[in-house]
Image 1 (cartoon, rainbow, N blue to C red):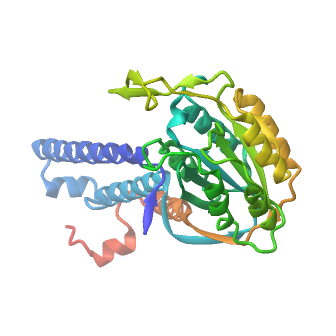
Image 2: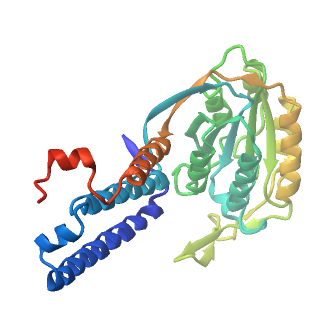
Length: 344
């Protein structure tokens, strides 16, 4: 297997081809001109040491040298290089609420978009921590297991939407239960779960949630998105608001941030409630939490990487360049005696 690092330099090969065409044109023109004035027999008498082969050989050597220099600039990477490393960090799971109430726009651009923005900013501020992702509404579903691949995390994060779960509600208890399976190290004492939600739950808070968290050494921090005043839930068609969600009586539903519910969850698990209105402030508080959390050493990871090969092509190119320097256009005495090319 191989890959080309600087493929843009391949245009230099066109220049080499152009030089070859110019040389052939020049060689043909010189041969034609010489024949107008001298025959080969007379020309050999006037220039007995003239070689008709070596100028071509010297040019071929030059072209080969240039060709290898161009390949060196493109820098082919071949084979694999295995490296192992150890990483210190914290295991963090994000549980994002994707219920319909998260479509409310009391926080711009919407509660769900704000939640994704917050998690995205947190991910970009991390360094060495493993992250996992859970989506939940009427039930919780895993989205991404614990990983240090932040690019994959942001990709899965952006794909979260309110249509991915048909059952509605805010099953925070299910999200907490699911997060337990994410923490695979039984000896790990620091387990962080960040719940990003408006807190609208159809179930009353119970001690069961706190028991689930405490028994599994999970510290839950909640991030509330939404306002206490609340907002209607828009229904969109072709990305345009056509109406608002209504209840059985035909009244427009107003969804509000249930701050107390989220605070109770955090308090019961010795965590912290964070107001999600301002992303910058959320990021600051989350970073403070992470900095005060004991880090663990993750298992050694191995990854394969292509090795640079440009140095070999530079070396070969230099060999041909030196060979060209040592070659003369005139006949070499011992080669002349051997007459390998049947020169007259």
